[in-house]
Structure formats: structure tokens, C-alpha cells
Length: 416
Image 1 (cartoon, rainbow, N blue to C red):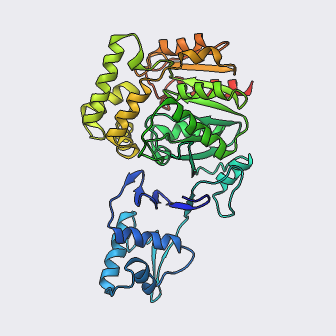
Image 2: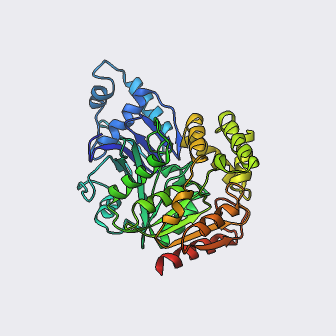
Image 3: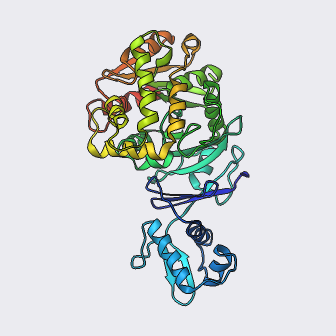
């Protein structure tokens, strides 16, 4: 992938990824025949004009003799795949006696790019982030890609306005799916009203590279370093939630001059499989077993266990979104490998070396990372503040009492 190369396209709820030849609609992978994929891609690339039938035959069928009925069938299949039809023609429009054209707003997804350099046709948010300006506050996000130190492809996005805040990567995220999730979108909107937020999918899940050999803590920190350099951030608040807290701590110790404020939410210093408690080790092993046998399966024991641990207060809609998130975020194998890796994190020796202002937030009823883990973080980091959030949820939900407190405390801390 060359710097500045177009690696995909986004339109409405749809997304085409060229390298993996995936079509995603509303965060879900939609199976399509190769010719249908090529047809949609051809129209996207030539969206500023009408594409004739002859050009489609040359591009999609490589010049073979094709009947009009075969072309019409592929056009119908393409429309169906992206939620369009011949009557509405919201995305693929037939121009009588001339051909077809892709209509509607399309955003190009751009590949690696040197920090601080934005091509003229790059999305506005990406060039603004690289130059230090605020990305658009228009309710849209723009996804970019960079490379970690070992060459792993990492996807990142920037939204919102305000002081710069970077959200460290953690298990089970997907930049596009999260943007439409009833659980994550309210959180992202709240962040965007208060901060200029950069987030990314860590290696092994989401839009970042799935085929990865190394899931060690050092590699996760290098992913964060690559995103910071790609965005062009000089100094910023760093927010780490769940195992992202350990990654954020390790980064802050390596780069204290880059981190203005460190915010740790629902985090831990020592992973579940390395703690002294036999019960927690057993819980960790049970989670790995459930992942391997129930990942992405509606109604499975894993989905119920996952929901009861992470968001016991979830509605049916939110629970369904967790199933979709599992299906789209990563494979069962990667999910288990990632979970095992983060459950073996140990940054306890780094706590005393944190020199940046630190705020520790933890929910009182958190079942994923018990509240004593948050207290240990705050006690181990010199001068850290600790705020207890009255909530049973590892991921806070809009509407619960602790929701405004979480964001108000973060905004207060970063502003001081």
C-alpha cells in the first residue's frame, strides 16, 4: 500500500475495502460475487461521470461477449447488495441509452501518508488532523491507515472539536461499526462535543490488520506510537479504558513529554490470568473457552456472559449490537488470542514511573475489572486522582446516573 493510495470507499452505511475485497453495509460483511464487487468498484471509481455498458464490459468482464440481460442482472445484484433498487436508485442510477452512474456522497479511504502531509483529495478531517487543526464537527468520521513499527496496518479516525484526546486501542473495537452502535455512538458523540478525539482499532480487530503474529504489550504500544505520528499530535490527553489503560500507562512512561493528561477508566495494572486470585484466573480461562465456542452466535452462552459482565444494564437493541460487533470485529481465533494476551499484561512495575497528571475512573459494580483494580492503579501512580462512578457497567450507557459524571470529570481534569 503506497502513501496516499485510495484503499477503499465509504458511502452512506456502505464501505468497500479494496485490499480485502470486502463490502460492508451498516458494519456487516455482505457476501457478493466477484463480478458484482468489481462492478460496484468500477462505478465508485468513475463516480464523477456516466459509465457506459461497453466500459463496464471491458472493466468487469474483461471484454468478453456479455448479453444485456447479464449486465442488468449484475446491476440488480449490486443494488441489492448495497440496499438500493431499480425504483429508488439512491446509489446506482441508470442513465437511459448512456449507461450507469454512482450517485450520492462518497468518501475515499486513504492509505499510509507521511505525518503532516495531506494530498489535495484526502478527506478534510485527515489533513486537518495532520496540520493540527480541528477535524470537522459535522457528525462524520474519516478513516485513515498507517503502519506500526513491525509493518502491521492500523486504522485510525478523528472526530470532534476541542482539546486533543487520543483513545488507546483495546479489545473489540471497529471504527465503522462503533460509529453506528447504540452503545458506542453516544459515547463517541459525547467525546466529540468536548474533545478533538483520535481513536484506532488495535491490531487483530476492526479495520486494522487481522493476520498478526505478535500480540505483546510492546507491539500494542508501538501501534499507539504509529497513530500519534500519523495524526501529527505533539501533546495530547491520553484516555485508556479496560486493557487500553495498561497500554496508555506504558506509552506515558515512554513519552512523558507527549502526554498532557492521562485518564484511566475501568483499567488494571495486572491482567486476570496473572493475578493472585484463583477465582479470577478461573474466570479468565472460562471466558477464553466461551469465546472459542460461542463467538458471534446469537443466543450462545458467550453472548449472555459477555453482556452480563460488560453491560449488565443493556437493552435488547444494545445486546443485539454486541453480537454484530463480535461478528464484524475479529475472528474467534483472534478474539481468544487477544483476550489471552491482555489478560497477561503486567504494568505494575511502571506505575511509580508515571510522571504526568493522572485521573483514574472506575465503576463501583464493574464485573470485568473489579473496582479494587482501579484503586490499585490510583494508589500506585504518584499524585493520581480517583473517582468512583456508581454504575454496574464496565462500559457506561447513556441514561444512567454516572453518564454525565464520567465526561464532566474528564473535561474538568483536562482543562485544569
